[in-house]
Image 1 (cartoon, rainbow, N blue to C red):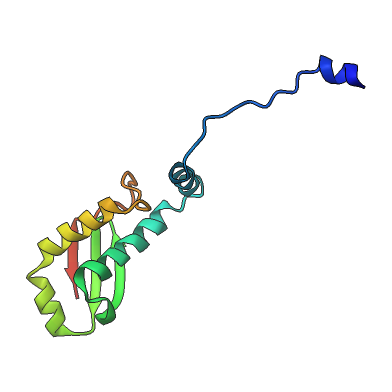
Image 2 (tube, helix red, strand yellow):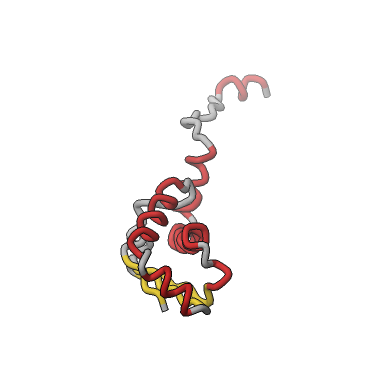
Amino acid sequence: MEEEFTKRSYFIRRKEALSMDQVVEEFIKSAKLASGLNTQRIFSAWDECSGAGPFTLKRYFRSGTLYITLSSSVIRNQLYFQKEALIEKMNATLSEDNLFTKDNRTTGFVRELVLR
């Protein structure tokens, strides 16, 4: 039995060690979760940057455009004049987010904001 063990070569191939950030990123890519996760991160950035989360009725993101339906016309009107600043602030928040996949072709950064 010992002879068989010594004759065969039982080697475990070593792979490069990965950090947890890299492992999570690879899992998100392999499970194809990036689009849904990016959309949720965009919605979270909207709530954080606008402060209008409690007044937001519907959120929808498609092709770089974030559609927001608000319950208050007064808040919608105030945010309308801040659209460019909100877009910049949301994109800055997203670029700092480790879970946001920046090179995703379907759900990337916010390019346009439509308030309803």
